[in-house]
Length: 243
Image (cartoon, rainbow, N blue to C red; front, side, top):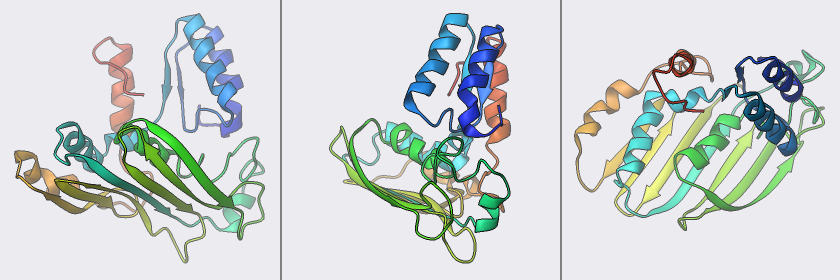
């Protein structure tokens, strides 16, 4: 499903009831209860529900995820995510659904969806969140800018800063982790470059830093083919689903 986000729930449920596996782009829904209804419908029909999270397949983020799982950071103190992108008014005006609560969901839910995902996938369950959002410049229903402060269950603190008002073009999509034994930043325009990688002790994985970074002119990166490969392998019974 690559339709406007607010249509995903109804379409996914219809497809599931027809006995067909579902793969939907992010966000899977714009309302919590709609997302639950999608999961329930697929469970009842005995079909798969895949939600595209292609950034998880980026070599840079695969390295970061492994470093966290190996305990290389020690205790994690702070996590920061920045999404400084640009979406002019013409972007929102190009389709009636863009910038609406019903079908779009806003900067956090739409454009920054993959970065919100990183907060949980890489660093573990979040315990609490408080946030400010605002529609500072665009003529739309939803927010074009927002900041959120988070506390993880492991005690780490952090923030995510999102705006679609960066002048004159997309500037940064990054995640930084600071711990007692290491610090790392994956940055670039779309978490495509290892900007900082320092740990108290060396590991063979450090040799992969240079090859993990890549050039991209798109904020979407190159993770989609890798994600689709996992979906196909899962349906063939050759792999476990990632998302």
